[in-house]
Amino acid sequence: MKPFMYIFVLAVLMLSCSEHDKSSNLMNDARKYMDTGQFSRLFELAASAGSHRFTDAASRRELDSMADYARRFMIDFPHSQADIIELLRADNVEADERSLREWEERGELEYMDIDLERRYFRWAHRNLYRINDSLRAIKQIDKQRDESLFRFCISEIKSILQASAVHGYGNPVNPRTFRISYTITVNADVVPPGEIIRCWMPFSREDSPRQDMVRVISTDPCEHVVSSDTGSHRSIFFEKPAVSGKPTVFSIGFEFRSWGQYFEPSALAATGNNDLPHHVSEFLGERVPHISFSDDIRELTESLVTPGMVPYEKVRAFYRWINDNIIWTSAVEYGLMADIPAYVLKNGRGDCGMQTLLFLSMCRYAGIPARWESGWMLHRDRVNLHDWSEVYLEPAGWVPVDVSFRLQPSDDRRVSEFYITGMDSYRLIVNNDYGRRFDPPKKYPRSEPLDFQRGELEWDGGNIYFDQWTYRMQVEYY
Image (cartoon, rainbow, N blue to C red):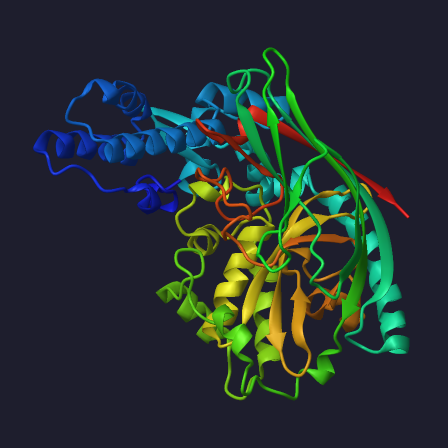
């Protein structure tokens, strides 16, 4: 994988450095090691920084931050060449050094070079089965999963369409009640005993017409703080001291009700966005790096827009293009990616959030307000983290769009294109934007700088990354 697709020198971590020549040289070396994947040298430099009298506090913080991100890369790219060959052969795929090179040259096998050794993305072999034409036809690893979800969704879609015809298009219909049990377990001895671990867990929003009746049932620990619903990330916050030799467990049980919604395209197709309300204007512009009007975004968007198109027709054109051209694949952690839409366009692939960021970029460049929405998908046997979006279309207002749920296999256009202007009832909405401030605020850089679905943890000594804790979600249906 080409290096520019990942963050090797992180602008957000480039803190002010001492003007001392020796300090400048040391930091230049550190950035070079980060940029070239020489992580062992970077770790050595960071470990010895305290002994250098010319390394100031800001430089030490920068070194520590770079070392932390280098460690994150190593977690996401754990496989050696021998490992990846073994994984492929275990799946009855013929693989050797030559075939690896061929897949790499075609951009089908994701890798990066760390300490002069080629290391492969943890799900590189699974993604290869989705990307490579021959292997996709043979393996069909997502076929059973997709067909099951399609059947479930089509049944729900038909029910929502029927209810909307009775109660009015755009009105919430078909409510479903869920009871959620969510647990985060921090590994034993991640922090010294007695130190306080701070935990932010995802929690149900109450400011969406598609979500209500939110009720906390139980928490551990008992004391907690629920964030304001006016913020972009809805969280419930806990603190608990670490105990020597024991994991630290945080848990919550809560209920909420989710509604389906469908907007009839014919009511949107005849109007444009005129005199938009002030509160939606912030969702029109760029938000570099992940919503950027790059030359590629401009060229693609303009190629899909024809004179006289109203906003809904543009949204439909963007949705269908992504459906036809972008393959769903497992993703590298978003915090390690420099420009997600650029990655998606270059490689023709990406997961739900990556496809959504591309869609948002196209909509905003075309003058259509568009914003992030995310949380969980709660479809039976398919509970998972998930991202989607909303676009502002007059006269409806905010309209849900789930670009990665794709066109449904149906001859009925309203069913097939349901997720262009509709949403099913099986969602937990946690966020209505990405990468915003927490309430209460987090001191250290987040494990996931963009999305908030799993949770975030830290202590006075730093962030607690994903490899140091696990999460468990359980869903009961009513």
